[in-house]
Length: 401
Ligand SMILES: Nc1ncnc2c1ncn2[C@@H]1O[C@H](COP(=O)(O)OP(=O)(O)OP(=O)(O)O)[C@@H](O)[C@H]1O
Ligand SMILES: [Mg+2]
Image (cartoon, rainbow, N blue to C red; front, side, top):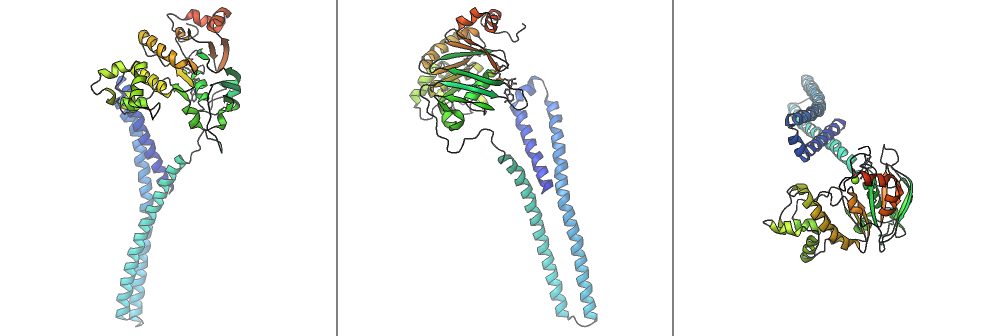
C-alpha cells in the first residue's frame, strides 16, 4: 500500500510538471530551453521509474515467498502420500484425489493472492488521490449562510488585519469606508497590496481579524457565490475559455440574449474587431485567449463586466494594455456603467484617476493617503510626489526612479 501510494504521488507530480511546462511553452521557446526542460523532466521520470520498480518488487517478493511455501507444501503432501501408501493407509484413489485437490487449491490461493495484492495497490493509489480531495478549503461558507443582498454598494473595512501565509501583515488594523456610489482610485507601487484589497472584498481570502461589511452585511457570513454574483471584477490578467467569443462574453451573465451580448461588446469596443473575424462571434479564442491580442482580451473582460452590471465594480488595471485612444473610448462607456455603482479602479496611469471622487494611496499594505486628487496633490505627500514623478501619466516602476 505504502509503495503504491508513493508511486501514484510521483505520477501525479509528473503530470503536473507536463501541464506546467506546456502552459509555459512560450517561455520555453523564448529562452530556447527545450533540452533543459527535457533534463528537468527526466529527474521526475527517473524517480517515477524507481518508485514503480519498488512497488513491483514488493509484489514480486510476496509472490516469491508464496511460491516457496507452496512448493514446500507440495513436497510435504507428496512425501506424506508416498509414505502413507508404503504403510498402506493411503489407497491409489486417495492418492490421486488429494494430489488433484491440493493442486487446485494452490491455484486458487495463487489467484486470490494476486487479486489481494492488486487490491492493496489500488487502495494505495486511492489514498494518494483522496489526500488531495480531502484537503481543507481555505475559505468556507459558514453553516446556514444566507445570500448577500447588495443594493447601495457601501463597503466598510472594520479593523481588518490580513496576511498571506509566511508574509508579514499586509493590512493591519485597517478601517475605512467606501460610500455607496463612490468612485475610488487605488494607486501605489507594485506589490503594495491593491489587488489584495480587491481580493479581500471578493472574499478570496478570509481576513485574520476584523471584518468587511457590504451594505451592513459581514461578507464572512454570507454565501461566497452570492457575493461574487454581485461584484463585477475585471482582473489584472483576464482569463478566457477556449470557447467562442459569444460564450466568453456571456460568462458575465448566463441568461443574456445574443442582442444584449452584442450591445455589451459594442460598448466595450470589441464589436469592431470581432466583426472582422471570419466566424465573428462564433470564433474560438484559443486556450486562455491565446489567439487574441492583450488589448482585445481586456476589452472582452470589460464587455463581460458591462453585461454583468453589478452594483460594485472593480477594475484592476483593466485598460492597461490598450492604446490611449481605445482606452479613452472604453472609459467613456465605463463612465456610463459606473454611474449607478460603487467603483474601485486600480491604476498605474494616474491620468485615469481624473474622474475619481477619491483616491486611496497604498504603500506596503497600508492606506497612507486618502482624499480627492486635488486634495492629495496639494498635500505634498506621497501621492503628490508620485504625481510629479509620473511622466506622461505613467508611474515609474520604483520610488527612487
Ligand atoms: N497568493 C499570494 N500568496 C502570497 N503572497 C501574495 C499572494 N498574492 C500577492 N502576494 C504578495 O502580497 C503583496 C501585495 O500583492 P498585490 O498583488 O496585492 O500587489 P499590487 O499592489 O496589486 O501590485 P501590482 O501593482 O504589481 O499589481 C506582494 O508582496 C505579493 O508578493
Ligand atoms: Mg495587482
